[in-house]
Each structure stands twice: as C-alpha cells, then as structure tokens.
Length: 83
Image (cartoon, rainbow, N blue to C red; front, top):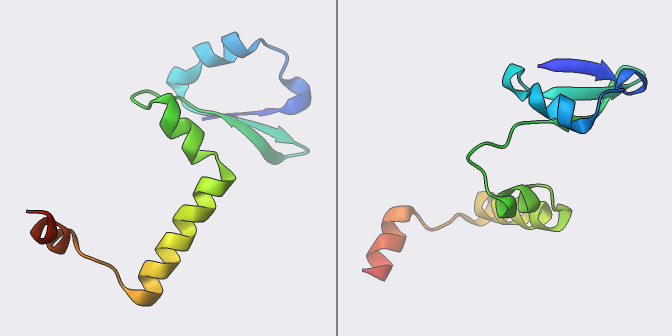
C-alpha cells in the first residue's frame, strides 16, 4: 500500500494505475484518507458500481438488520423449498 498527500499527487492517473502491483494507493488530505485507488482484478463493473452505490448499501444493511432481528431462511431450507 502506498499513501500520498493530495497536494503531492502530481503523476497522471495512468501512472498511478501502473503502480497497482504494489497494492492500493491511498490519497490523504492533511493526513486523513480522502480517496483510494485499488486494483479490481476479477471484478465486473456491475459489482464495482453496486458496491459504491449508497442506496444499494443501505438496502443490504436493512436486510442484514432484519435477518439479525427476525431470523432468516437457511440455505438448506431454500434448497428444500426449490427442489
């Protein structure tokens, strides 16, 4: 992982992308992280889009909270229902 202060990030995006073999690039502003450039090998665009979509993340969190509070259906039960 590489950390760089935003004011020092003067290379092109392409140059930073070429450095991805060494891990993520974290951009900071006054020492606090504000952005990250990470490798997305073996990931499709839909997954990236959904993983950064606030509405989708909220939906997933609501679903997880509901399962915690009300319980859920096990994978074995789902298999039984659909066989």
